[in-house]
Length: 178
Image (tube, rainbow, N blue to C red; front, side, top):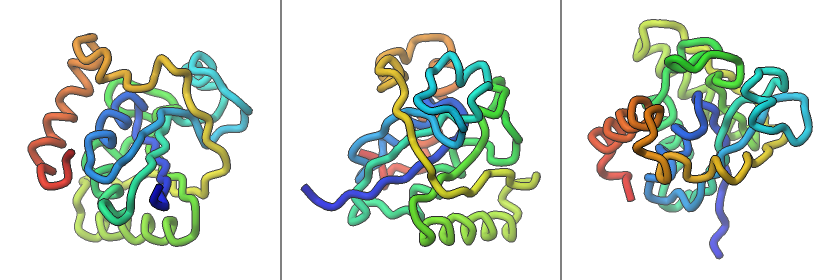
């Protein structure tokens, strides 16, 4: 098997983030989970209560010969609101924060450069509040969260929140979709 890279993003609900990144060419697998907090092996209910310090996040396993980290950054910033602190739409709490958890200094540098580019170009009318941190530990979420959107797309939350994001992704990024 080829050498694969990993990237970690928190962009609100991990059902949304997983559904988006799993549709990209070069992305081999996306795992929903938790990172950035202080509790070992957190559970969904604990994270939802906003008591662990963890963000709902995804681990993306990707082939950098097909998709670059920069392209992952571009998709990340175009599919959620990086200007709201601890909030994405109606999802409120630090577990829904916008964050990038880097595995090395090169990723951290690229993320900082990209945020600066977005800021300089005034892509967002508000200040970008996305946290840029080094990854400490990622905990995979419970199995019922894996492929949640694909298995539950008719569920009201999925239909109202995730489906429009998928539609936007498909309209704006045809060349990088599977």
